[in-house]
Length: 257
Image 1: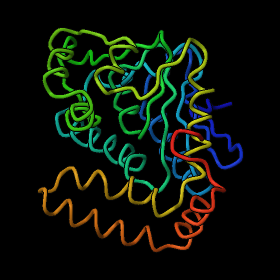
Image 2: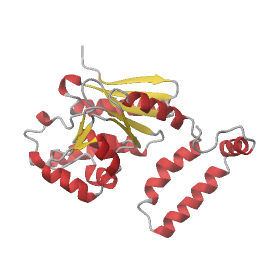
Image 3: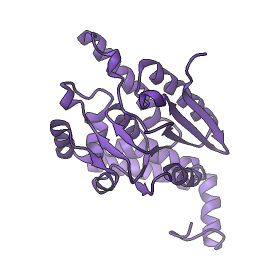
Image 4: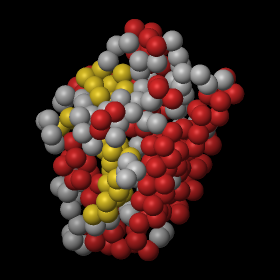
């Protein structure tokens, strides 16, 4: 019977996507990457939020190096672009993605977590980019997306020295959004995902599609797009109903729920 590699479970409006190669510490092989792509596509069609996690001892130990012993430069290039396509589906898709991290989240595993919009980590989790110490370079988007979260200087240090960040340091650096006690990352991810799944669709579209693009624009262009997105979202039926509920004191105030 073939390995499952990536599990998928839908609970209410939340899809749970699990890397399921625990005997290899969820190392990302070509087959696992293809399975992940298929599961993400299914999840985005069926849910309003998704959580990515790892079965077994860790989130993911990264790229399966056993598949890369004799690849030519052109093959490595195309392989890297394949990772970009899969992670772009997560990052730019219509459904907010939350990474629930425990144990090792290194190399390609960190690139996967960075493709998600929110990251929850247990206290014992750690984050690293060991490619530099192995004589290779990142290929799953870290030079753009991890560097934007951590800053290029901190990523430079991690790649040149092999330094790992624990969950607390990752939170201080802006890589991790929430830190939980051991064994509670999935519970916190479930709580966050439930809130995300209740968000107005036009607001979600603005956060996932407009906000990342605004970061790459000039100030004036970014503010223009912000105004356009505000006009679209705030005149929608969902927004009108939610604003009425707030004004009529039927909805919680900021910080209350």
